[in-house]
Length: 492
Image 1: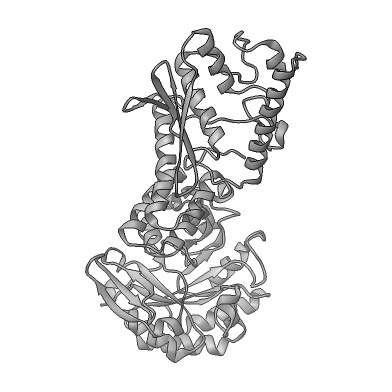
Image 2: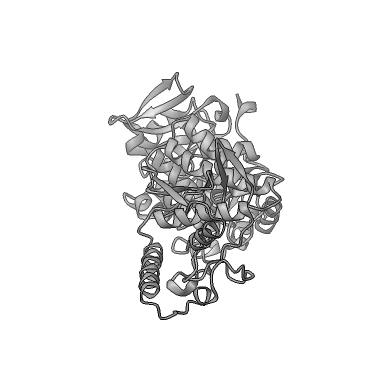
């Protein structure tokens, strides 16, 4: 029995993270090379009410609350490497929960480090650090009451002496390992991790010490994991945010492109019927500073895993197309009789949009295409636009000389969609489209290109209406009141 017990020496582990450490992320971490994975903190009171249910459809074991919510889901694949972390402040309740899950997990862990209110209320999480007697009582009860290893995760105390004293008391309870987050209870990720504390603790005890807290300061690639382990003098390393941002950090080839990681994560989320809210949260964490991008906003608007996958698939396909064409987005793809290309209409800075855009305010691709059709004596362009219900995105097809063109990317407004379709047509025809810095084609007169008037009342009135329309479009885009396309190419 002892030979099969999980070892905590020389491992890298996915740290317990609320809303992140569910089954899809844990399995993906194992795929990428993590040795051990922790589930998110689950509160003992809620878990004690659960029933263990074998889910034959998903091939999982589910712990289901009275309201039918699945509180914890696991599967055979991770059985020997998943650690169940609980939030508890009561020895008896802790033992009840540990016995409930012990046949389906490799170890149980007690959270003694989380400083957030949802964890500390009721004396759980980091609140336990001020009550060593209760820590001892909980751990002893668990160690003697279950057949699997017991561990705990703490934060450091204000002094090194207090920290060492606490960990030595923890060691005496018989736990298999202790994870040490190298920050004080009141410190946050912006504060540097105290590797000196972790190192001193590791020297003071004989059980494995798992270093935690190095994501921002030290760990950005797989090679950095060993750097952090040595800096902390620890047996093992546990990663939270570095893994949350890109779980392929566990791979010797990592980190891999986040789009690829998102795609793999989604496969598990759908395979194991992960809650859509949880799926969205994890994907948005992977996007990090791009969470307010069009892709991020669409992810947040999606309601089901299927919708989430639909949102990301278009973005991923656009990236694949770009890579296959040597990094150029202008790869032509035939969709039936329609010529498609992944392009966007980008407006200039003049209308309060932060980033630089390719087209000046008084010139549009539609204007160039209209002038070209007049010059070539063909029927003027005809636009047909559709709106996608799930995100209110728009896509337009333009018909010119009996041929059809559209952008494969969805736009924020009907007019932007028409402009994007015009761009595709112009690029296929090899006709200039009016971008800033582009050589004068002669299709549009100099006065129009420079935004000057010619004194003609009709043209002046038309131009003013055109500029007003563009201002409205740009202001609408700046306010973000339209849901944007699923491709992930930012308009802001």
